[in-house]
Structure formats: structure tokens, C-alpha cells
Amino acid sequence: MRRNTLCLELTTRTEALVCTETVLFAVTNAVAILGNLLTFYAVYRNHRLRTIPNMFLIALALSDILMSTICIPFTVASLFHGRWIFGDTVCRWQGFDIFTFGTSSVGTMAAIAVSRYFCVVNREKYPSLFKKQRSVMYIFIVCCLALVGSVPILVFKNNSVEFQPGKAMCLYK
Image (cartoon, rainbow, N blue to C red; front, top):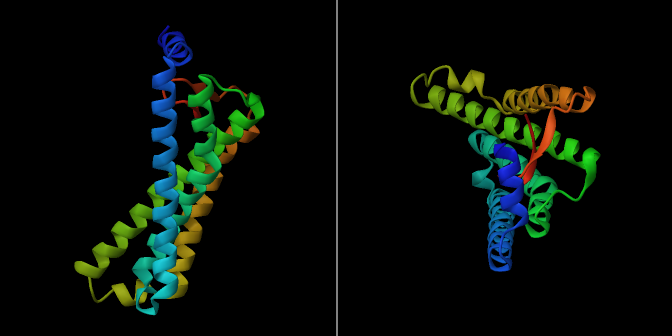
């Protein structure tokens, strides 16, 4: 019942509300892309910023850029049209991508927290646990776990992903 109400609300919005929501979401997405690209640029330009903690920040920025460029444009279009217009296959892929990039972001933030914990509280172990090569491995493991956790969305065709009009995107149920 709630889903039907949200579908109706999404399709019957006023033209002013459609424009406002679409533009605000598109601008927010553009700012997200720009801000994360500036993070890349800052680390690229300033050699002193090429540190192990910033490797984790770059990984986080990358997952955010992927979310902003691959997933969010479909949401903007859905807000504009008031419904999902891209079909079931794209819906499943959007659900897969959102779950993968979201899980990767959360996992990377957890790795940053662990890194900061050892840097602040257990300083003697930090240099051995967070060398460059190990940090790359940690980031790789986080991304692989996010990917493996998302595979069932694509493999099992059990209607596990659906368009959620209240969020204007396809998500895992």
C-alpha cells in the first residue's frame, strides 16, 4: 500500500516540484563529483599528501565518484520523468551498483577508522600494519568483499531489486 502511495506521489508532482527536485539532485550530484575529483587533484598535485591515510581517502573518493557517475544519473532521470523508464535489467544493475559502491564506501570508512585507531592508540603497531603495500591490499579486500556481497543481486533473479519511488532508485529489497 505504501509503495503505491509513493508511486502516485512521484507521478503526480507539480511541474515546479519536479523541476526543483531534479535540479537540486543533479546539482548535488555534480558537486559530489567535483568535490571528489578535487580530492584526486589535491593528492596528485601535492606529493606530501601521498600518504597511507590518504590512500584510503582516495579509495573512498573513487567509490563516491562511481556512485555519482554510474548510479545517480538514473535517479535524476527518474525524478524528472516521475517513474522508472529504463527497464528491469538496468534496474537490477543500478541496485547492484548502489549496493556495491555503498558497501565499498562503508568498508573503506571502517578501514580508515581502524587505521586511525592504530595511528592514535597503538602507535607501535601502526607502521607494521599500515605499510603502503598492505594498505593497497586492505583496500582491495574491502572492494572484493563489497563486490562478492553484491553478486547475488545479479545472479539470482528472484525480484530482489525493485524501483523504490520514495527514493527514486532501484534498491535491494
